[in-house]
Amino acid sequence: GGRAEASKVRNGMLKAFVEGRFTVGKDDAAARIVTDSGADVDEDGSVIALRTVAADGRSRAHLGGRSVPVGVLAELSEQVIAVHGQNDQLRLLRPAEQRAVIDRFAGEDVGGPLARYRQVREEWLAVLTELSERSNRSREMAQQADLLKHGLNEIDAVAPEPGEDVELTEQIKRLAAVDELRAMATESHAAVSGSQDGDPDAPGALGLVGEAVRRLVSAEDSALRDLVPRLEEASTLLSDVGAELGSYVENLDADPALLEKVLSRQADLKRLTRKYAADVDGVLAWAEDARRRLESMDTSEEALAGLALRRDELAVQLVAHATEVSAARGKAAAELATAITKELSGLAMGQAELEITVEQRPAEHGDRQALAIDGHAVHAGPDGVDEVELLLRAHNGAPPLPVHKAASGGELSRVMLAIEVVLA
Image (tube, rainbow, N blue to C red):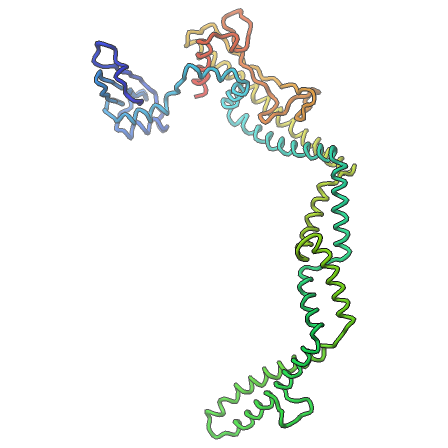
């Protein structure tokens, strides 16, 4: 399915061709490509693909006895061919690549417990980090905790309420302008309900509406009498407003002591807003955040013991998951080694035998990610605690050696090809 090159045709020949017979499943992607192109699959489930390149550069593609576009062969090739380059075997020199081969072959048997291992390991590392920081930065954190506690004590002593500064501002305005407000409310009350001494010359809106009702009730014209209910409704509303204005005037007393108390309270709140936030709501938010920070900065022996207990609990879980991963890798290693050895016999390495070892990686001195398993300290990396190594016996009687030491360049390439065939 690649690009045609006339240089592939041998000198003196008219064309070059490459032909392959592939076995395809009934319902896999390769089979769909074949049937969609109109080609036929043989009774044994195989199909023949053919590509020819003429000396003049023209090319033709056939699949299952039918002429098809070159792109169809390219699509088929992606499903049935793994292209192996001469430098691909260098990946085998990396330990992580050797472990990845096992994990890919094992599939969910390793993938499931490995996912659980990684989840627990993430929390375990977080607890380790927090415990280390609290232990190493106890003096610095204690100083920060003292500052936060001092601020919280100041705020708790004042005990501000949400939105209290706005309410106090309105109350101070009202207390400071009490005489003006009383005059305004008194005049408004007289305009609505009339004068308090019952002066008939100042009946107020309520009296005027009442007079209108009395006049219209006796009217001979029904159109005028129909207005009476609406005036009575207005009279009721005016009566309610008048009562509220009267109550406002009665409760609006000049109270210098109260004004002084409110001003003092406002001053207390302003001291907090100058230090911690722009308003009382911001001060309360600062206090809430400070309490959360204090909880995370607890360097007491009880807090450190709690973290250490959680670390140990997670370590037990981590050991269980790591052991499960190691067991699954060990089982897969034996099966994979057998399958690869079988493939090598078809690659002119009939006496070669591949072994795959799965061993725990010892932790180095001072390793923060050390985990104790069966009395041994091992490194708990993101992919588990295992080191995987491919060993090769080049021939009968030869000792097993790391594959890059036991195999020549060509043999190493064939080992890699055998691995790719098995994984495919």
